[in-house]
Image 1 (spheres, rainbow, N blue to C red):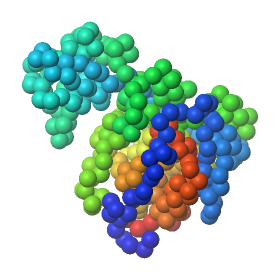
Image 2: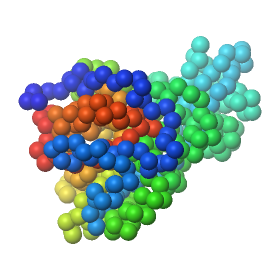
Image 3: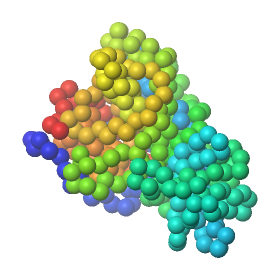
Length: 358
């Protein structure tokens, strides 16, 4: 594509509904892997991943843990309410999306799961679409006891015990996400052991995926879209591991778009502070929206699932591996009947050295 401006319609494609994975594979690493690192796509299995990486490569994983963030309740009038907790705050407070026939007023209460009352403190967020709630105890404990797995809207069944196990990575340790870092759902002990035996090193970041990951882009002009803020943390140990990998000529491989956004956000924070080619360790907020033309500073390869049409995540993949190449991979995946979205298959991408025009 030679146009200097991409619009929303450039990221549209037709996907048969039968390719939307409704359930995980029987085994995590039994999923397919589309190798998109070369000029032509190669169909592989996820268990082939260790052979596609080199000794010394650094694989960066997101250790966020998905909360049981969906709650069902009712107002004192009897009206039903569905809540999706977006973020846990101090003092037993949270921000949440609420779905109700009539918007609850500040000072009112909602009884969730027939077990506890939450006080509505008011609306919040940059566009006022979120609600600020106060719970009677530790939100994470209450969600764990009374909440439901926040499955994406395109998965049509209610959460089951299988979802409670499989919509969570093996290395999830820091609770706070309302959606899984889905590219990491494919990793099991078999693959992790093979990677270690191959000499592939690992490091961790945390990015608590917010409900904004499913927020549609509603403007034809991409520059008008605003991302919801997400909290991330890049430890100093990970920054040191990246420096060591670079020093020996190894590649940095991001397991998922969340790991990539955290790393590139940290590098952008360092660049804005006048520290080019550095990565700022520590915890911050990010609203980074990656579209074609973005200058990647850290990540060399990306493991990612297949994303929704017109989504910010598809735009990120196109920015990373090139628009024409990525869209061709998507068309191949549809023809080859890969499984799409959160419980779907994965692909491996390599950073394009010459970015598309913004």
